[in-house]
Image (cartoon, rainbow, N blue to C red; front, side):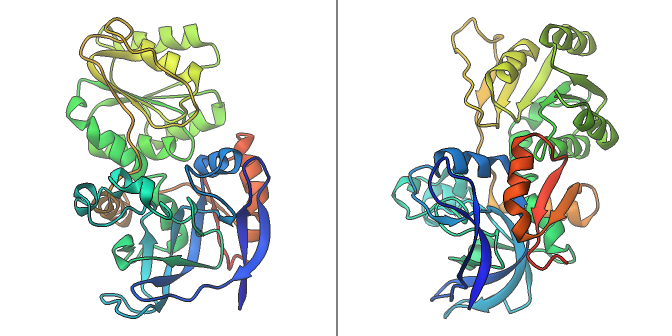
Length: 349
């Protein structure tokens, strides 16, 4: 039996849709029938540069949810048909970090055969996906898998990043979100739910800024003219500036902007992998400012994110596409045409 899949081949090559074999679950493994696979900027990074130290080809897609299709020998606690989200980063499962469910910070990641579906092994841009352990599956309850799939990264990553700086976000503080795409639009919602701080959304696309306004941002600013953007934002924050700046882009212009916006005794969090740098000395950042480079989030935090979605307090603004449309959706994402999140749905009609 075969299925269609969106595949990475070698760095620099465009993605291809191919027929591949449907895998069989071995002992301890779970086969998931995919209900939705989010399309992420990190997929573009894989396509352009490869997946860390792993080689292709493999199926793309690290934001996945669906239904348990088949259980390998010895798997308990699940049954066929259960709706589940797939936790995206796969650690060793037994180091100090993994035992805290913080598998993105696994101490043994460099020696592992892969670090997740779509990041070294076959991911979820296909009809089925093989998951190596039931610990990586989170029950969805009443959430539809195609709606829940982006929660596993587009919501989990900003949730984890915000929680690391949440102690700074008092009601008289300001948080700045730079880049209001797939992750940034979730960050605006999460900030609104998790704290009372004022929220500033920054982007170069007015459509995304209007989206952020609708989601609850107190101020939206187009940063194409950086000096004007800095003046507008610092006029809003006052001399205290921002307590938390979240950069979901990570290119040099956004990092330069972030340095101008962050205040003393604050946190500058770089989530985007755009390749920009911050020269770090005692004088390049305000005193007391920490720099944080978080990765993804924990399995426990994914449970918390799913609970927020189940209660209706956050939602993913998604557009749905077939597997065959996957390469075009990735190209649209590269060109900045996607607002919210694009999600591939294998059985889309």
